[in-house]
Image (tube, rainbow, N blue to C red; front, side, top):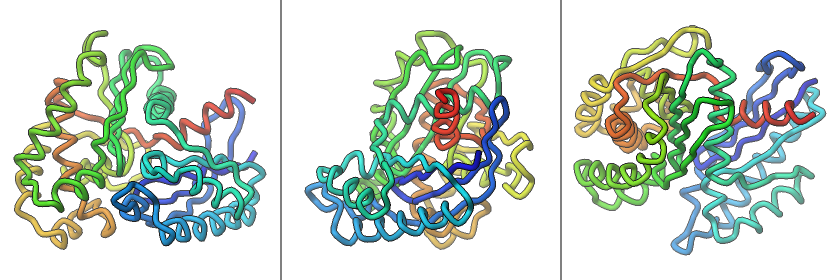
Length: 303
Protein backbone atom coordinates (compact mmCIF):
# COMPACT_ATOMS: atom_id res chain seq x y z
CA UNK A 1 0.00 0.00 0.00
CA UNK A 2 1.06 3.59 -0.48
CA UNK A 3 0.83 5.68 2.66
CA UNK A 4 2.21 8.82 4.20
CA UNK A 5 3.61 9.94 7.54
CA UNK A 6 3.20 13.62 8.36
CA UNK A 7 5.67 14.77 11.02
CA UNK A 8 5.08 18.23 12.50
CA UNK A 9 8.34 18.97 14.29
CA UNK A 10 9.69 22.01 16.10
CA UNK A 11 11.67 23.05 13.02
CA UNK A 12 10.09 21.38 10.01
CA UNK A 13 6.93 19.86 8.65
CA UNK A 14 7.83 16.69 6.76
CA UNK A 15 5.54 14.42 4.77
CA UNK A 16 7.20 11.10 3.91
CA UNK A 17 5.35 8.93 1.41
CA UNK A 18 6.29 5.26 1.22
CA UNK A 19 5.28 2.05 -0.46
CA UNK A 20 4.69 -0.37 2.40
CA UNK A 21 4.74 -4.15 2.05
CA UNK A 22 4.00 -6.77 4.67
CA UNK A 23 7.28 -8.48 5.55
CA UNK A 24 9.42 -5.84 3.84
CA UNK A 25 10.82 -2.40 4.63
CA UNK A 26 8.86 0.76 3.76
CA UNK A 27 10.31 2.09 0.50
CA UNK A 28 10.47 5.91 0.22
CA UNK A 29 8.50 7.20 -2.76
CA UNK A 30 8.26 10.95 -2.16
CA UNK A 31 9.12 13.64 0.40
CA UNK A 32 7.48 17.03 0.93
CA UNK A 33 8.83 19.29 3.66
CA UNK A 34 8.87 22.91 4.70
CA UNK A 35 10.68 24.84 7.46
CA UNK A 36 7.88 25.88 9.84
CA UNK A 37 9.98 26.87 12.90
CA UNK A 38 6.94 26.42 15.11
CA UNK A 39 9.04 26.73 18.27
CA UNK A 40 9.87 30.29 17.25
CA UNK A 41 6.15 31.05 17.11
CA UNK A 42 5.69 30.29 20.82
CA UNK A 43 5.06 33.46 22.83
CA UNK A 44 6.08 34.16 26.44
CA UNK A 45 3.08 32.16 27.69
CA UNK A 46 4.03 29.17 25.52
CA UNK A 47 1.14 29.68 23.11
CA UNK A 48 1.57 29.09 19.38
CA UNK A 49 0.82 32.46 17.80
CA UNK A 50 -2.01 32.95 15.28
CA UNK A 51 0.69 33.41 12.62
CA UNK A 52 2.27 30.09 13.61
CA UNK A 53 -1.07 28.28 13.51
CA UNK A 54 -1.89 29.78 10.10
CA UNK A 55 1.49 28.75 8.73
CA UNK A 56 1.06 25.21 10.03
CA UNK A 57 -2.48 24.88 8.67
CA UNK A 58 -1.37 26.12 5.24
CA UNK A 59 1.42 23.53 5.14
CA UNK A 60 -0.84 20.73 6.41
CA UNK A 61 -3.38 21.45 3.66
CA UNK A 62 -0.62 21.40 1.04
CA UNK A 63 0.79 18.16 2.49
CA UNK A 64 -2.65 16.53 2.44
CA UNK A 65 -3.12 17.54 -1.20
CA UNK A 66 0.37 16.25 -1.99
CA UNK A 67 -0.43 12.89 -0.39
CA UNK A 68 -3.63 12.59 -2.42
CA UNK A 69 -1.81 13.51 -5.64
CA UNK A 70 0.76 10.79 -4.96
CA UNK A 71 -1.89 8.13 -4.42
CA UNK A 72 -1.84 7.71 -0.62
CA UNK A 73 -4.84 6.04 0.96
CA UNK A 74 -3.62 6.62 4.55
CA UNK A 75 -1.73 9.49 6.21
CA UNK A 76 -0.49 9.09 9.77
CA UNK A 77 -0.03 12.55 11.28
CA UNK A 78 1.69 13.49 14.52
CA UNK A 79 3.22 16.54 16.21
CA UNK A 80 6.23 16.58 18.53
CA UNK A 81 7.85 19.00 20.96
CA UNK A 82 6.71 22.46 19.84
CA UNK A 83 3.02 21.56 19.78
CA UNK A 84 3.38 19.21 22.76
CA UNK A 85 4.75 22.05 24.89
CA UNK A 86 2.23 24.65 23.77
CA UNK A 87 -0.52 25.61 26.23
CA UNK A 88 -2.92 25.91 23.28
CA UNK A 89 -1.98 22.54 21.78
CA UNK A 90 -5.64 21.50 21.53
CA UNK A 91 -6.44 24.65 19.55
CA UNK A 92 -3.53 23.98 17.18
CA UNK A 93 -4.55 20.36 16.63
CA UNK A 94 -8.21 21.28 16.11
CA UNK A 95 -7.31 23.92 13.50
CA UNK A 96 -5.22 21.46 11.48
CA UNK A 97 -7.77 18.65 11.70
CA UNK A 98 -10.67 20.92 10.74
CA UNK A 99 -8.84 22.21 7.67
CA UNK A 100 -7.55 18.86 6.45
CA UNK A 101 -9.69 16.06 7.94
CA UNK A 102 -6.45 14.55 9.26
CA UNK A 103 -6.27 12.94 12.68
CA UNK A 104 -3.22 14.87 13.87
CA UNK A 105 -2.10 13.66 17.31
CA UNK A 106 0.46 14.96 19.81
CA UNK A 107 3.16 12.36 20.36
CA UNK A 108 4.50 12.19 23.95
CA UNK A 109 8.27 12.41 24.29
CA UNK A 110 8.53 8.88 25.69
CA UNK A 111 6.65 7.51 22.67
CA UNK A 112 8.95 9.48 20.40
CA UNK A 113 11.96 7.76 21.99
CA UNK A 114 10.27 4.33 21.91
CA UNK A 115 9.26 4.51 18.25
CA UNK A 116 12.68 5.81 17.20
CA UNK A 117 14.25 2.87 19.04
CA UNK A 118 11.90 0.48 17.18
CA UNK A 119 13.01 1.90 13.83
CA UNK A 120 16.69 1.55 14.76
CA UNK A 121 16.19 -2.03 15.94
CA UNK A 122 14.49 -2.99 12.68
CA UNK A 123 17.24 -1.34 10.63
CA UNK A 124 20.21 -2.93 12.43
CA UNK A 125 18.56 -6.16 13.60
CA UNK A 126 19.12 -8.48 16.54
CA UNK A 127 22.84 -8.88 15.90
CA UNK A 128 23.31 -5.35 17.27
CA UNK A 129 22.72 -6.61 20.81
CA UNK A 130 22.02 -3.95 23.41
CA UNK A 131 21.25 -0.67 21.65
CA UNK A 132 21.68 2.87 22.89
CA UNK A 133 19.68 5.28 20.73
CA UNK A 134 19.99 9.08 20.75
CA UNK A 135 17.95 11.67 18.86
CA UNK A 136 18.38 15.47 19.08
CA UNK A 137 15.32 17.28 17.80
CA UNK A 138 14.44 20.93 17.72
CA UNK A 139 12.78 20.86 21.12
CA UNK A 140 13.94 17.72 22.90
CA UNK A 141 16.59 15.05 23.26
CA UNK A 142 15.27 11.48 23.16
CA UNK A 143 17.19 8.61 24.76
CA UNK A 144 16.41 4.89 24.69
CA UNK A 145 18.23 1.67 25.53
CA UNK A 146 17.50 -2.04 25.45
CA UNK A 147 18.23 -5.48 24.08
CA UNK A 148 14.76 -6.27 22.71
CA UNK A 149 12.50 -4.74 20.08
CA UNK A 150 10.99 -2.42 22.65
CA UNK A 151 13.42 -0.40 24.79
CA UNK A 152 13.89 -1.20 28.46
CA UNK A 153 14.05 2.49 29.36
CA UNK A 154 13.31 5.76 27.55
CA UNK A 155 13.76 9.40 28.43
CA UNK A 156 12.82 12.71 26.81
CA UNK A 157 14.69 15.82 27.94
CA UNK A 158 14.05 19.50 27.00
CA UNK A 159 17.45 19.75 25.33
CA UNK A 160 16.57 20.23 21.67
CA UNK A 161 18.98 22.25 19.53
CA UNK A 162 16.40 24.88 18.68
CA UNK A 163 15.13 25.25 22.23
CA UNK A 164 18.64 25.69 23.68
CA UNK A 165 19.57 28.19 20.98
CA UNK A 166 16.42 30.25 21.52
CA UNK A 167 16.27 30.06 25.33
CA UNK A 168 19.99 30.02 26.21
CA UNK A 169 22.49 31.07 23.54
CA UNK A 170 20.31 33.84 22.08
CA UNK A 171 19.79 35.16 25.61
CA UNK A 172 23.51 35.61 26.23
CA UNK A 173 24.41 32.27 27.84
CA UNK A 174 27.95 31.33 26.78
CA UNK A 175 28.83 27.99 25.19
CA UNK A 176 30.83 26.89 28.29
CA UNK A 177 27.84 27.74 30.53
CA UNK A 178 25.48 25.88 28.23
CA UNK A 179 27.83 22.89 28.21
CA UNK A 180 27.72 22.55 32.00
CA UNK A 181 23.93 23.03 32.18
CA UNK A 182 23.35 20.38 29.51
CA UNK A 183 25.67 17.93 31.26
CA UNK A 184 23.85 18.37 34.57
CA UNK A 185 20.51 17.52 32.96
CA UNK A 186 21.76 14.54 30.94
CA UNK A 187 23.64 13.30 34.00
CA UNK A 188 20.38 13.01 35.92
CA UNK A 189 18.91 10.77 33.19
CA UNK A 190 21.97 8.63 32.50
CA UNK A 191 21.69 6.17 35.39
CA UNK A 192 18.52 4.28 34.33
CA UNK A 193 19.81 3.84 30.77
CA UNK A 194 23.20 2.56 31.89
CA UNK A 195 21.88 0.30 34.64
CA UNK A 196 21.31 -2.51 32.15
CA UNK A 197 24.93 -2.43 31.02
CA UNK A 198 26.98 -0.77 28.31
CA UNK A 199 25.79 -0.56 24.70
CA UNK A 200 26.85 -3.09 22.09
CA UNK A 201 25.94 -0.48 19.51
CA UNK A 202 25.41 3.27 20.02
CA UNK A 203 23.23 4.87 17.36
CA UNK A 204 22.12 8.40 16.53
CA UNK A 205 19.22 9.43 14.30
CA UNK A 206 17.63 12.47 12.68
CA UNK A 207 18.81 15.70 11.13
CA UNK A 208 21.04 17.25 13.81
CA UNK A 209 23.13 14.11 14.26
CA UNK A 210 23.28 13.52 10.50
CA UNK A 211 24.58 17.05 10.00
CA UNK A 212 27.16 16.63 12.76
CA UNK A 213 28.34 13.35 11.24
CA UNK A 214 28.72 15.01 7.84
CA UNK A 215 30.64 17.93 9.41
CA UNK A 216 32.97 15.34 10.96
CA UNK A 217 33.64 13.77 7.57
CA UNK A 218 30.92 11.14 7.09
CA UNK A 219 29.64 10.33 3.60
CA UNK A 220 27.01 12.66 2.09
CA UNK A 221 23.38 11.61 1.81
CA UNK A 222 23.81 11.35 -1.97
CA UNK A 223 25.84 8.17 -1.39
CA UNK A 224 22.67 6.39 -0.29
CA UNK A 225 21.32 4.92 2.96
CA UNK A 226 23.48 1.78 3.05
CA UNK A 227 26.82 3.55 3.44
CA UNK A 228 28.09 3.22 7.03
CA UNK A 229 28.29 6.66 8.65
CA UNK A 230 30.07 7.08 11.98
CA UNK A 231 31.86 9.81 13.88
CA UNK A 232 34.08 9.78 16.95
CA UNK A 233 33.80 11.77 20.16
CA UNK A 234 37.25 13.25 19.55
CA UNK A 235 36.12 14.61 16.20
CA UNK A 236 32.98 16.07 17.76
CA UNK A 237 34.93 17.76 20.57
CA UNK A 238 37.10 19.52 18.00
CA UNK A 239 33.97 20.55 16.11
CA UNK A 240 32.38 22.04 19.26
CA UNK A 241 35.46 24.23 19.73
CA UNK A 242 35.41 25.26 16.08
CA UNK A 243 31.70 26.15 16.05
CA UNK A 244 32.07 28.35 19.13
CA UNK A 245 34.11 30.83 17.05
CA UNK A 246 32.16 30.57 13.76
CA UNK A 247 29.43 32.88 12.51
CA UNK A 248 26.08 31.41 11.48
CA UNK A 249 26.99 32.11 7.85
CA UNK A 250 30.24 30.17 8.22
CA UNK A 251 28.39 27.25 9.80
CA UNK A 252 25.83 27.26 6.97
CA UNK A 253 28.68 26.85 4.49
CA UNK A 254 29.88 23.64 6.15
CA UNK A 255 29.03 20.27 4.57
CA UNK A 256 25.71 18.77 5.63
CA UNK A 257 24.27 21.94 7.18
CA UNK A 258 21.04 23.44 5.87
CA UNK A 259 20.64 27.21 6.01
CA UNK A 260 17.53 27.06 8.20
CA UNK A 261 19.30 24.95 10.86
CA UNK A 262 22.76 26.54 10.86
CA UNK A 263 21.99 28.77 13.86
CA UNK A 264 21.17 25.66 15.95
CA UNK A 265 24.31 23.65 15.28
CA UNK A 266 26.36 25.05 18.17
CA UNK A 267 23.76 23.89 20.68
CA UNK A 268 23.25 20.61 18.84
CA UNK A 269 26.98 19.86 18.95
CA UNK A 270 27.15 20.66 22.68
CA UNK A 271 24.28 18.23 23.41
CA UNK A 272 25.78 15.51 21.19
CA UNK A 273 29.21 15.80 22.83
CA UNK A 274 27.73 15.68 26.33
CA UNK A 275 25.63 12.66 25.41
CA UNK A 276 28.60 10.72 24.05
CA UNK A 277 30.78 11.61 27.03
CA UNK A 278 28.27 10.88 29.80
CA UNK A 279 27.21 7.57 28.25
CA UNK A 280 30.80 6.51 27.58
CA UNK A 281 30.32 6.37 23.82
CA UNK A 282 33.48 6.77 21.74
CA UNK A 283 31.77 6.35 18.36
CA UNK A 284 28.21 6.94 17.16
CA UNK A 285 26.72 5.32 14.08
CA UNK A 286 24.01 7.10 12.10
CA UNK A 287 20.78 5.20 11.36
CA UNK A 288 18.88 6.39 8.27
CA UNK A 289 15.59 5.36 9.90
CA UNK A 290 14.10 7.39 12.74
CA UNK A 291 10.75 8.42 14.19
CA UNK A 292 8.73 8.51 10.97
CA UNK A 293 9.78 4.96 10.08
CA UNK A 294 9.02 3.85 13.63
CA UNK A 295 5.47 5.21 13.36
CA UNK A 296 5.04 3.38 10.05
CA UNK A 297 6.44 0.10 11.37
CA UNK A 298 4.20 0.08 14.43
CA UNK A 299 1.14 0.85 12.29
CA UNK A 300 1.94 -1.95 9.84
CA UNK A 301 2.60 -4.39 12.70
CA UNK A 302 -0.90 -3.76 14.04
CA UNK A 303 -2.72 -4.21 10.73
